[in-house]
Amino acid sequence: MKYIKTDIEGLVIIEPRVFSDSRGYFFESWRAAELDAELGRHIEFVQENESASVYGVIRGLHFQKGDMAQAKLVRVVSGRVLDVALDIRPGSPTFGRYMAVELSGENHRTLFIPRGFAHGFSVLSEKVVFTYKCDNYYCPEAEGGVAWDDPSLGIDWGIPASDAILSDKDRNHPLLRELSL
Image 1 (cartoon, one colour):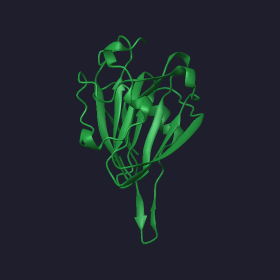
Image 2: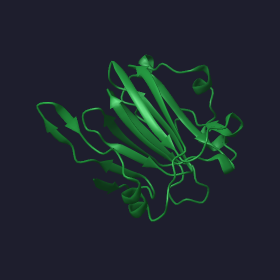
Image 3: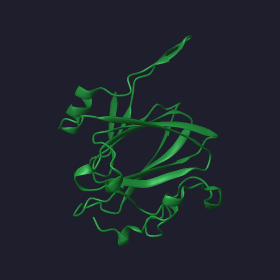
């Protein structure tokens, strides 16, 4: 696997070696020992989630607070998304910066997102199946979010705002400057 460090400390793009032949393909989407070595610490995933969405859906920007914060390993099984990770770590030199990367069933990329980030994605294809591993359990009382359209962030989600499909909860997240972390 190829590990690509990004401009934001802790965010790592993983590109697997894909073996293809007439039957299809095979790849390892992650390997614990390699990821631990790359990150310099052990990550133990305790929960895996999967969602299916249609074109225009934006999920996010979500995070878990305090002791329930989550590191995530995210990837697309089929379809295409623009995946966004926003640094909300207090005191971080990159606080308020985000990174966006296209993840797809074709490029097989995986993104590691450490604790202290808000995360979201927009669906660029007709349909998508998205999966992510978490190193902590989901806790409704610890959930938080940042407005997907916060003008101070200027995130280009890769779809027209008029096509955006959001949950009621995602429509009402506060701006980054309004967060109390």
